[in-house]
Image 1 (tube, rainbow, N blue to C red):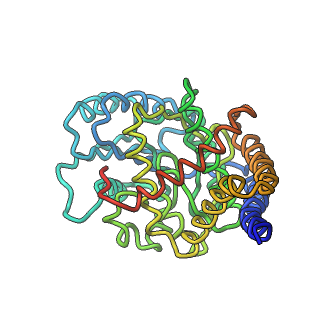
Image 2 (spheres, rainbow, N blue to C red):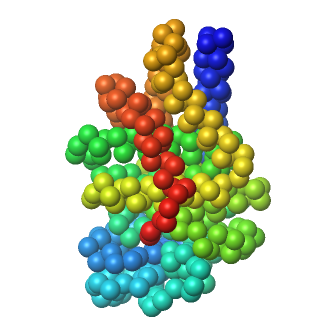
Length: 359
């Protein structure tokens, strides 16, 4: 009986591994670079007290290797009480179009970030939007790379936020955790059934934003301006692409404290409450089967064989992900992080569904 149960659990987990590997294969075929379209872009940044970061972010955008008349920067300064606006105003001479929207308050029942993004979209002069966090650094060819992914019929483009080089064990684990997230995101795009996007570096068109109803249905949710919107675009049948050109990826600093990390992850996990039932069930069985494969050897020794098979399968996925997303992790770190990833999702994941989440 225990053997049959272990095989059943391993089969469930094996299904998700096969889904990931095939999805990543489809992604590579789908995301081949195309000729640049030279669209006009509105670059939208929602910033709340980002005085220490905004200058570097804007300077990198000022250095873009893209025709200056073909893009604008819209900074939605959300209730800033520091020097964010004053610093941003110094960049007017470096941009042909820099618009700063100062937001003094937020309507009741509306997420602050969605309010800021909505106001920026309303002010945008162009019909292709690229959303960036205020603390990211864009490579000089970022817009060119994103433009290659915005084919003529592309409604949205998912891209990556890469961390600065990790300096300690915890930061290396966060990079590993992101690598798994990128694999899930990439596989979803490969299947034309998108799941995950990254709000600090992605884009979509005004047309698909309008057709999806904008933020109306999720305006009170603190998170989900990326994942939930992307999933809605997918339900419309819109074409979603993934930028696999490293020039289209941005750099972002590691979180400066565990409490900051925990608050951010709780916010991200909270968006899962609004995922479709199919996705929620899928995530539940993915993480449950992972957890059980780690636990089973403690009560049934032959289950150790299936745990070793699981580790091998996970290694194949991460190796594929490392190749596609140009990331590296040692074999020793992989073994440590694979177990830690299970604990992380088991202990921290549920926190996004309970209690009050702060921005």
